[in-house]
Image (cartoon, rainbow, N blue to C red):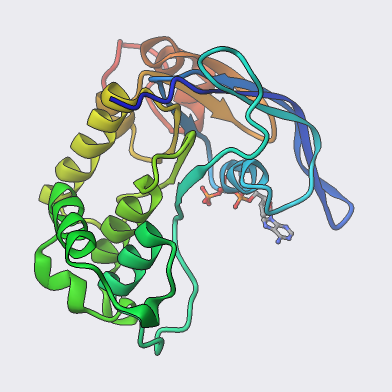
Length: 247
Ligand SMILES: Nc1ncnc2c1ncn2[C@@H]1O[C@H](COP(=O)(O)OP(=O)(O)OP(=O)(O)O)[C@@H](O)[C@H]1O
């Protein structure tokens, strides 16, 4: 089995925009086989941090990706499921076109091989997506259907780091379980590090293995239980400061 066992080390990551500082001195380690929940208020900089890791916005500081042997990975593969996706809804590209082109590396207009289509069907099924989705144009997908397809897309080929930005905000209840079951099995089978941005603390408690509270910088980090009990998290999410874990 191809395990990843990669790790990501973030040191003093700072992002400035329009004379303002969005992130300052963010330092965080994400180890292989770990689902790190990144939590925080609206505007805390969670998406900005993911975009910096993807190399989409400039930052200072360092991000080092390393493999199981501790060697630096110069060009890491990063899987990303965004919070929302802005694209031309009139595009004629279908889900099948997108997934098969991604697997084969060949342009959409060369058609799909049977085995690629079969693999796309199997992958879609893992996130609770029906085979009929393959024929749908991506511009006609519902929010939840799109998020499932994007997860499949993010997992092929296997990434060295998986970034999930509120990935189930539009997915129905059954789909949420299928989605996280797949993420959890990817974590245990392939041992990739995963950063999960979520406002749903129930999902964080159920699926994450570690948590970090971000507010321009990392305020607290540690085991999910520890972080959830901190006054900073309870204050941020308006939870009772006393009386155990009741919400
Ligand atoms: N392109 C941009 N130009 C200027 N400021 C930006 C830009 N993108 C984001 N920001 C600002 O950076 C801050 C962090 O935004 P970001 O989207 O990273 O927060 P977030 O924690 O992901 O929020 P949410 O939970 O609402 O998704 C916000 O104050 C936002 O206004």
